[in-house]
Length: 397
Image 1 (tube, rainbow, N blue to C red):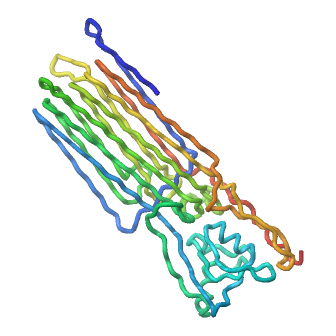
Image 2: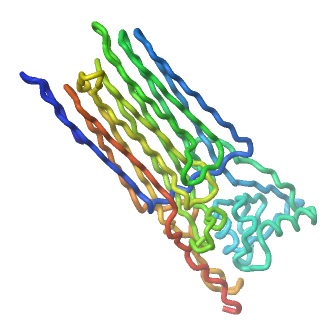
Image 3: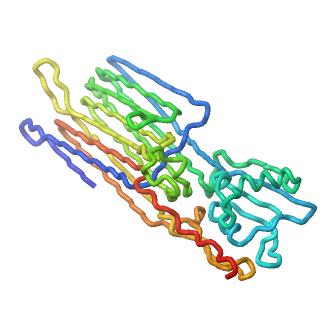
């Protein structure tokens, strides 16, 4: 917490306050979320020069997800399909599930199987030429599999599905300038498209000059929020650069929330703010960002200069929760299945390996010659850890 207050005591005094804060984290694992096929753009520009009253209200909330979960349901005259323990473990580690009783020789008799899309092109751990997707297709051709039935893929609350990433962002701005000579200009753009490193999904720039008449007063509060969460994801389809350990890396689960904003209550000010965020894209090495900047000061009209009168504040709140994907599903195969052990990273039950909470606020009140604050959050996938080694069965063990 940083708090600076100035008061006018006796003769005219000017207090210069310069506050600069940069909060940058480039080793976290926010991956962003890809755009939906249909993209939209929104843009507004507002300009007012008024002697009297001005009000402006902006409010928006936006949630976007990418859920790759696909369910396959099958029966075969009540017989089901046999899966080995290592195959069941591989499926569960990727977020899938099976239903069926255990029957002889260590196999699981499966009546219902749930396979995340991320596993479709992955080979069986104990039969590498065959992928999960091709095996399901063969069962369909043999009329032993009913499906696929596709569910998921949409917004929901509760635990995220395997490989799912979901973001929510919110922007709010309320300005009221009562009985004053004032100039208000604002531009806001919103795009639901994938963005590269120098672009934004939401960007708002505001410029306000206000001088009270009689008992006039101006107040404003502005806030920008970004909330992202994801289960573990395979990096092979998320990283463009072939030298970034994209395969067979795993980008671990995360749950990160950032919020920044400002407020003022004044009878005289010149205030400029900018707020922007980017979280939609297809390359995990392009950072997810939230930026907020404010510059408040007095006014100069002709040869007369006056400091800002009143109070102004700005804040940043960050809560970072990151995993390393150290949780694993492991076991030993029965001798009748060749023996040997297996180990898979458990993508649905990550262990939280980092918890970071940071808050900061700055306040100035009285006669304010300058108040400046810059805040920046940046998060991207860095070196991607490879999953634990899978030890194949030892034939004849």
